[in-house]
Image (cartoon, rainbow, N blue to C red; front, side):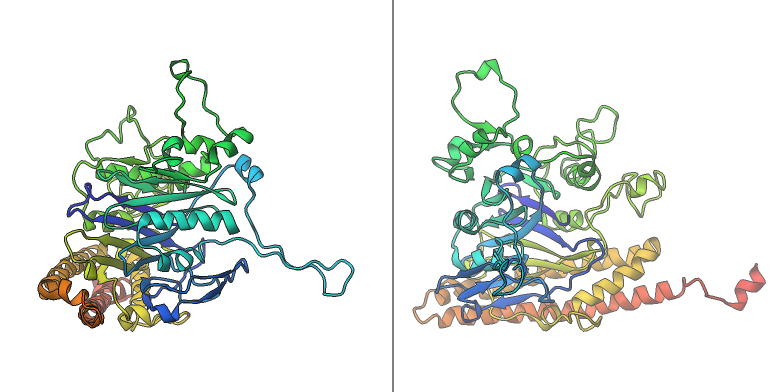
Length: 522
């Protein structure tokens, strides 16, 4: 499993934005190069075929413009991973999760069944396509929705019609709401709205801990689900809750999806729960996290899905957490406390096989034409930080777009960050100061560039964006593309400087280094 998700409601964020962020981590031993691209309506397919499952679907004829950060290599399909459309709807897909075997028995995953034999043979059987998966979701949903709720509904329709071959968590947000969807078996699903004053920390484990089925079947204020979910649970004996005499005559249906659908294994306590523990520890630092009496430990399986932070959450908080490795605890692999065992006991959030982290910020105070910012980083988050790029554009900067799928090159942000991380990892404390300064510089420059760009077009953006010929909107997008290029050009220069610094420092620390002064001083 891979990926870590952090969601921040608009009243919990520092500026009233909805913020969704996810690390896209490759599977163990693999590394997927990433790129930042805009998909214009004319480039969106009208007939779609999945590479992995061979599912085929005719798509609507009116897609909108959207920007994504997909894989470079086409071997597993598009894998758009994170994106924002021109209606300021953001999506991230997916957070890999797991459901228990009872669910899989009741509603099996819809997997590709290859053809058997050759046409004309007596035992020949045609191929049976599978459902959709991570490869497909953003491509099938994001170009056709105007709100996060519409995205959830479209996901539900696709699940009912085609099913899925894997278990996933899917995020959709707009300027007002954040929704988190978890697939349940091949065709079922649940969704919760993140409370406005809360954050949700999600680490590769089915996480929603309360679903109000009554609300999901009626007003859908904060809950949504498959139309037959209650019947599905009852028919397959999935609800494990013990009877509570106090609520014997209460008809409302509230379930804990973790106990009904999820898993809670020893592997979860090593690989998954420690990441939620660390994110909550950082955002609620006054709680007791370390004493023997602490309510939640790294291996706790009952940490709340969503909770209020002690202070409003910033982009810097998100960037730190998505690249974190248990700093300040005995579990930090670069730490000096604890033991050799404790420092490698749990899976960190920022790992070597992170391909990208995209933090999508939908800002209520900015006009719709330039409301959405995609904070993008490539490579291991422990050694880099995201930079801001406007989403509502028709083209993206070459430094982030033209990533080579195979060959390392310092002309690419992805490969430069990969090279930097390998060198800095081997000499963490010798390069830490340079990395920290880089992070501060990128974040400060990014915030300043966004503020200056906003100010330069704020006065006429609304009028330009509303003209009937859309020429004004094109002009705004051109300004956003110019700002994005300026950010990328500055980032390339600053990242090259960091590479030069780290290369020099680590060259001096090579094991075969030798100076005559070393000999005489020994």
